[in-house]
Image (tube, rainbow over all chains, first blue to last red; front, side, top):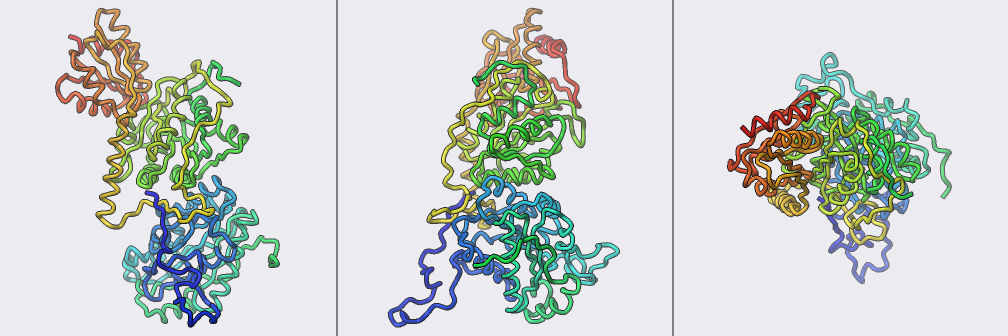
Length: 277
Length: 352
């Protein structure tokens, strides 16, 4: 089905939902909801960083002035309802196929900004073929990749990105590399492909890292808009509910353990250099 | 250059027909016996400023079609039986999301890897949905190279009209054979309807568009299914069929695609032996010409259905006549193609 959605009803977008009254007229607005983010409340669990990443994407779309020019592709998984949260045109893909759907959109409409939003089950398991070939072709698309090392929505099963020894509902004794292999490192894997223009990984665990993530996202977007190739930013994200940890412990777990398997940083950067504002 | 009669291979005619039908984007993966389709389009589409992508798999192909169709373009893919099987999940999404597009299946022998020889073993898959859930594609069955050229445009037109996938169901004979057909290299662009639902960037639109096949509310999904079913009912007016020598016939032969060509020759041979046989050829396999078959069958002694399968369309013919006329079946499988004489023999048997 195709739907025309308007979730701005009843909200004053200029004030980001803040109360607009005569008394407050002199106050300066220092923080507001990005215009590309809808006012639909997130359905995500406490401590999850899907909401953070959504907001960052919306900030970027606003910053680049792309709200009227964007087509986003949603995954299957926890972010399956992502089309509810952005004010841009959105397409819901089947599990793992977002890079193929994005290829269809981008080839059909080369002047639009096209992004996919994908989890690690979606991108690194069932959709590995599509992301590798989209990267190999150098599709001018931007991939926002969320790696939380588990199948969240289906109830906490092992993912290709689960750590060795990680307990999940399909590896209750802990992930055994003898029978289930080792974690797949997507950035390292894709970095050998010439079509990739920008690749980076960051842990979404602190304000500092969130700022780093913004920096990486700008480059991943420029990889597309400057016609260089595919851009991808992988965020290491907590899943406190399926990890069986408190939100705080989950962030510590990323900073202590997950980054050892998935080292943060920039892997590929073929951009000419920073663009002066 | 106006259309001119030229000796053309079926797959090449189909490719040129896709261009004439306004195909903006083609996505496909090589598989025999349809390889001339992507080969011709890989050359002809880019030089017209249109899109050709060789995908990494049929799974990727159908999802690229999904994306380009969602963007409001006339998008298509072409494949053969095993490849089309791989597309069925995507086709179900496309049908639920109500996106118009064209899928070509130049059928080969199955099941499994089967063979590369002609078959009509994918009738059920094409006409009964094929993927998961309750949905249909419009299915067109050409029987000569001329229709291989003309049907892509018709398929795009019907797909746009009903916002559904359309399938062109051919077979290895039609794809590989050459015969004269009227083909144009520069047909005028077709009229394509506005697509205000397309996810092509808001560009000033007051609301965002969403293309989706997820309806989590049971009543919502039920209502969406009812809407789809109403659409399939409304499509019945698009039913197309052809008849040859049926008025005085005692034996009615029902066949589609290449089988109908063979069956028509079989009917002519039978008439030489004094047996009045006529042909009814379904052109749309969905919607299926059930009423037309039932009407045509009223004064017939028997019906003979001829297919390159173990008997698939014959089930729909039996449903159409609902026991009022006996229905015989003659099928070959695995790429074996019956001769007109063999079809004639079956007609003679039926007439006894």
